[in-house]
Every structure is written in structure tokens, then in C-alpha cells.
Length: 173
Image (cartoon, rainbow, N blue to C red):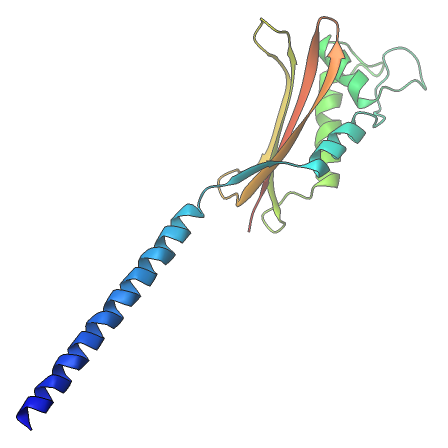
């Protein structure tokens, strides 16, 4: 009888060790998956691309020639690059800044409470061999807690180069 009690004790010990090993392996797998989840996923967004394309035809409140010939966004960007003034004595770049921020805010609600946590936009002129010339750089929110980011670019051909408009949005949990 004493021998059977020790066999049962050995079986219980082996079973306990197996349970600890299984729990440890499951914990390591869970830890590995949660560490990989920390990287943000960057992707190109058709929604942002469509937004950029359509925003280029948005009519602004700036005209440099005569009223009612108001500039659309792509013409306003060109006027900003050329450092032109609107007829109301505002600089084209300040009107561009206000207008672009406004249509982004109306299209992509950016706040801590919404799924859109932040955005950053960059408009610049580029020629093949020269460094990029920044026209406008705007942003709102913080890109530190993004579960994913999405962005798109739009180009406007001008003179011997092109103007590029980049927009990236940070999505949170």
C-alpha cells in the first residue's frame, strides 16, 4: 500500500509540472503577440487619395485678378508658391493654410475622442535634382498612439517641376 501512495504522488507531481509548462508556453506566445502589436501599420488610403483629389477643386475666398474669379485649391497653392497676394490684401499662403486646415477638419474629425487622432499635411515643390521647397506644413494632434496610419499624395504639375501634397492620418484605438 505504501508503494501505491508514492506512485500517486509522483503522478500528481508530473501532472503539476506539465500544467506549469503549458501555462508558461501559452504566456510566452501571448507576450510575443502583444509585443508585435505595438508597431503601427502604414497604408495608402483610397479615402484620403479621393479627398486630396477633390479638395484641389474646392473654391477658396481668394482671387488675385478680379471678383468673382475665385481660385480653387490647386491654383491657390500655385499662388502661394509664387508668394502672391489676394485682392483683400491677405497673402495666398495664409488663405491656403486656413482653407486647407478647415476642409481637413470638416472631412476628418480629429480629436482624442474620435478614431482620427492626428493628421499631418505637407505641400512642397520638387524638381528632380534640387531639394524640395516647402510651401506649407500643417498638423494637428499627436502621432504617438497610432494603431495605424494611412496617407496619400497628390501632384500638380507646374513649370519645370511639380507640387506634391501629402496627407497622413493617425488612427487610434
